[in-house]
Amino acid sequence: MRLRSSIRARLVLGAALVLLAFLAGAGIAVQRAHEDSVRAAHFARLQGTVYLLLAAAELDADAALVMPPAFAEPRLSLPGSGLYASIFNPVRQQEWQSPSTVGASPPFQREAAVGEWRNATVAGAQASFLATTYAVKWETGKREAPLVLSVLEDKREFDREIAIFNRTLWSWLGGAALLLLLAQTLLLDWGLAPLRRVAREISRVENGEQSEVEGNYPAEISGLTGNLNALIRQERVRQTRYREALSFLAHSLKTPLAVLRTALDDPSALPATVSQQVRRMDDIVQHQLARAAAGGAARFAPLLPIAPVLNRILASLEKVYAERKLVFVADCAPDVGWRLDEGDAFEILGNVLDNAAKWAAHRVAVGVTRAAGELRIRVEDDGPGFGDVESILQIHVRGDERVPGHGVGLAVVNDLVASHHGVLKLSRSASGGGLVEIALPAP
Image (cartoon, rainbow, N blue to C red):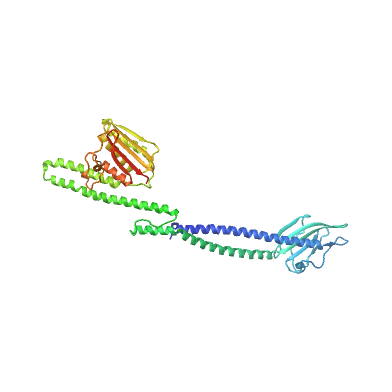
């Protein structure tokens, strides 16, 4: 699987990089802290050696330095021990060096301010040293002499101690990193298992082995599976509507075609028959195509403002029925919006208002409101009202069985409202005309 297409690989790589960066930063910080601590401890021991030398130092009658033959620190008496000491009198150019310097040439420091400690790393001819230097003004009675005490320790012991610690530190951190990466990989596999199950269920849906995603999933995925199931159901409803429309269309066109074939035997009646049957066939085709094109419940559609759609429809109807001087009254707040396909909105409002305008005497009123989780549409006119309501809204297999006078409009609207799981109701208005009420629930 390519890295860019694998969430698991991305998460593993991202977690590994973050973990390694964190452990590397922590390791470097611990390493430096330990090195500083060990260096401070070594310099503290060297300062202790300086105090030891100060306690043992004496001046004779000529203010010359006198040192004992042995010290409490045995390494000062052992040649090549790695610990070396020097006391230098800059006035007399006299220097004392510990017996441990036999055969060695340590780079002793001979300059320092009185009372000042100087800790440094100095390089010699064959090795590097940790050096501590301290200068005092020695006074004993009338005798006094400036002394510079310098104590050096071979840095190889310090480097060896640091190397051992670093090797141990990085070995443990490396082992911890491997264990944490393994644990993270196992946790990611466990956390991503629901996604793999979703993928397997979708494959079974594609293969026709199951109708929709059925498993129980965590809250973070349940919304996804719910939306997938809604899309699957919506697509199946659309496919079913296409098949039914084609089946209805084929069946409904049989009668007009049979009438036309019969009319061919009677030339005198042919023009009128052709005109009538062509209109019927056109109505049938329009009806079935409108049914097939119905968008249905638009759960994922953007929020559609209803007022602009309604205003465009009313503007068109005012032009179409200008000779009759109909009055159109609209009541729709500008902020009323609904998750509805724009084409469905034009079909529903356009057909209902056009039907009302056909039968109205003087006035058509429309109101669109949003209340209690529903979009409510109310259209009324002052015409003769509806006759057989059941016949008008009944969806027939044959388009020529519609009630004359209402066209295919209300049948199409009924189909569209049903596809949105809504309700369409026909009744009489207060003025005795037709009243159409439509309620569309939230998708």
